[in-house]
Image (cartoon, rainbow, N blue to C red; front, side):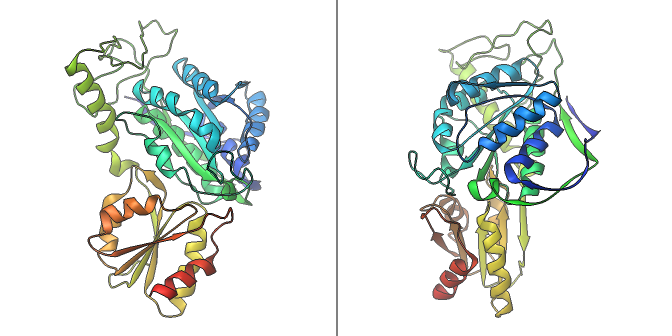
Length: 383
């Protein structure tokens, strides 16, 4: 079952905060009371802020020896009934991949923040990038589905923290906030509302905790200590959690439900925002994260010069908004995809829009944000 409840938020009002600080505030507002992590640039401020806030709210904080242990601790805390979170950047995110798959298989609600930085390897720790797009979806092996959000502002760092916890709890799934250094270290206005909507976990006992009648059903999740006999394993398991590693039926039913509970609810999960989209548009920009801010400025400038161009901002990267992009691409001759990488989301755009429009990447990997003038120059050059 589970349900949304309207709850009051402490210290409602207007603030001037850093993105990482705002995210921590959003996590606390949603009821996060456990944080495990390891310091890493450019996500460390989240850890510092959570330490301060969890003291105030009688929560639990632990610095682990590495990111592998950090996510392991978060998974354990979630099964103890807590709303739990960790934060990292590229190298630490890579270390989390095995436990990410474990969390997906055991349907453990948790939030993972990846503040992307320039890579590969240790790369440029203080510089922004968007190189973890595909890793966030496909980093762990096997078939599973998760939810990945891409904030573009300090306000969305707060708002998406709330959404991430709500969706993690509602769908019993790891939810990733895929920020980048530019948004994480940005300082701007934040409005903390007086009330927010919070999803409270279905923790009924006496029901199968890993199965249901429908292959998209979200089963209840009682916590350790509630009196339910719980077995939690990353191996193939039936509706009761019993390990069955040689049974085709068990594997098929488990994987089908892990995938379909997200795919069949994708329309309720996916979020996009648009600007300047017209029925007879000449061009479209598909962008996400901090780069979408530059894209919006570029669109405003290009429209003043007479070009019929619009922006579609992808707020939920995974599940990918296939149909939204397909509909908008049908109106345009060209679709531009600016990214702080050598091309990742562009391949998804090409997959759904390539038969309708020419899809053109705008790539930048120098550790700097993509400026509006760069996007304008590339569009004018090709258009």
